[in-house]
Image 1 (cartoon, rainbow, N blue to C red):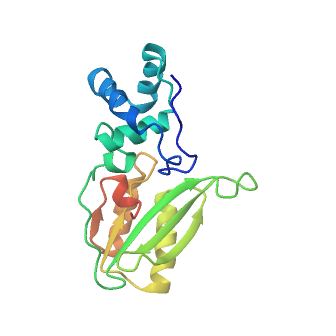
Image 2 (cartoon, one colour):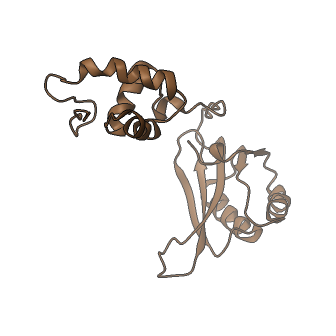
Length: 191
């Protein structure tokens, strides 16, 4: 049995939905035998074992409508509680580095050191460095402090080199700024 397909536009069915009467038996089979399958695998089994040919996208829409499948956006659970941003500009500066091929092969691989205001998400200072080291953070911090003054607190992402974080933190203590550790990457990425 060939299953009439949906339109190529998502969520827009073909005119008149000629297959609407066939959804109940198909969903019955899926509920009974393939309830823990994803739409792609369930569509393959329906074709092989029951002779019902339909696209995995059509089956996905039917399964979502019947509550047998959740869309990816609905599956994602919040892993952490979001923290409230600071109220005033300059109160907390988030600092992190990103090692990347920024020049796409036209120059050496380097790290971008970023200083971001927590209240406004304004990029306060950007600096390219050869590597994400304690020395590069010290130089970037000195430049930031000369231009913007001393923030009340700083939040620092963890470095990539073993020991670099400890050295950087020890050196940054000379500026007498309280440190707020950022333990998980989702906080460091400023979502």
